[in-house]
Length: 163
Ligand code: C5P
Ligand code: MG
Image (cartoon, rainbow, N blue to C red; front, side):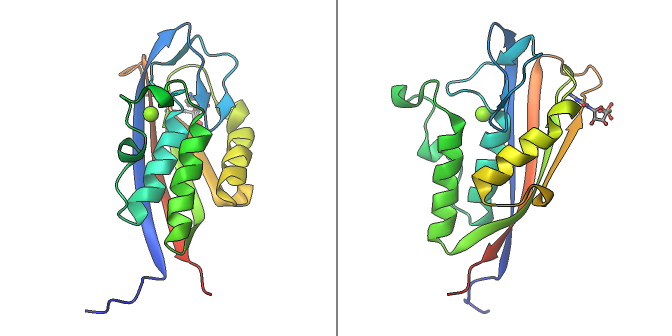
C-alpha cells in the first residue's frame, strides 16, 4: 500500500442546534434578520460554520471541533464561530491541504433563506479562500418535522498543495 499523501481528500460535517426565541440566528457568519428564533448554543450557534469546520477536520482525520473547542470551557462562551472555522482551516493548511470546493445544505423551516444565499456563499468563500462559485448553498425545510431545529450538512473537497 502506498504511503504517499493523497492528492485529494473528501470531508463531511454536520451540525444541529435547537431554536428558541430571543436569540440571534447566524448562519455562515450572516445574521438572519427575519428569524424569530435563534440557536441555543455555547458559542454563537452558527450551525453552518460548525459543520464546515467539522468537514475540514474530517477530511484529514483530525477529529472534530469539540476536541479543540470544548463546550464546557467558559472561554468559548458566545464566541464568534468564524474563529472556530479559522482554526480548522489553519490545521488543514498545516497538513499541506486547502479546500477546493464546498457544498452546504441547511435544513430550516422558517424563515426562508433564499434571499441570503449569495451573501452566505460570499461569506463562506471569503473565510475559506474560495470563489463564491466554489461554494454551493442549498436550503431545505424539514416539512414541519423539526420546526424548532436548524440542521446543516456539508461536504467538501480538499486538495494537496504542491511545494
Ligand atoms: O424543503 P423544500 O424542498 O420544501 O424547500 C423548497 C424551497 O424552499 C427550496 O427551493 C429552498 O431553497 C427553499 N427554502 C428556503 N429557505 C428555507 C427552506 C427552504 O429558501 N429555510
Ligand atoms: Mg454547533
